Image (cartoon, rainbow, N blue to C red; front, side, top):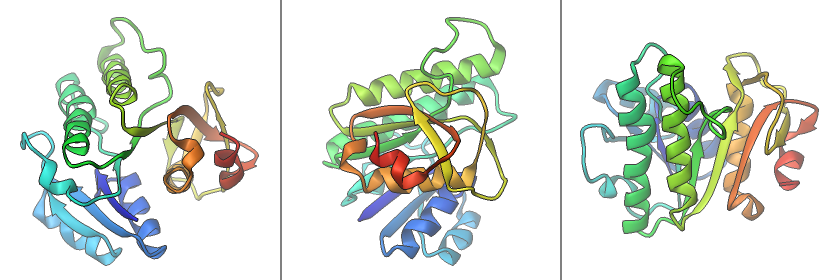
Amino acid sequence: MDVVIAGGHGKIGLQLGKLLAAHGDRVRGLIRKPEQAEDLVAEGVEPVLCDLEAVDDVGAAVEGADAIVFAAGAGPGSGAERKWSLDYGGAVKLIAAAKARRVTRYVIVSSIGAGDPPAEGGGVFGEYLRAKAKADQELEASGLDYTVVRPASLTDEPPTGLVTIADRVERGEIPRADVVAVLAAVLAADNAIGKTFEVVSGKTPVEAAVAAL
């Protein structure tokens, strides 16, 4: 499989790129800064310089891909404006690029809470959830073979390989490495197409949880 990862240098994107490359997939990671390229190359990932907030047409970055994983995000400490320009705007640019370049598979890393964001208020986090929700909605309406993955609060703890996946889950935490495992599994699972779900640490092995979607 030829996979393009938006947010290729992020904590989820870099781990996912490493995992997919180790499985023999071709992986391209979109990055904003040239100095990030070396880290991707070290993990077997091809760096592609593509600033989703600065470039209008990102089609060339996904040319020939089988799948796109949107794992980019403005990150902690960023303001409301960047939540909309990247978490929403970047995702929508890649949706348009996928449709134009006939890349049918699109997996997006969203957030728990995006299924029912506050209508207003909530500060920057409220804007984040509204931006994520709108991006999810546009992907679901795009006609692409989508999967929307909404993790609980992310940690850097070691992976457990055990998760709970459902339309709605209890608030909790999940290691980023387990989210990565879920993303890799849904890319290979036809039954994950057209699904939107939340995921948190649980008691079910990742492969079994995805197979049960």
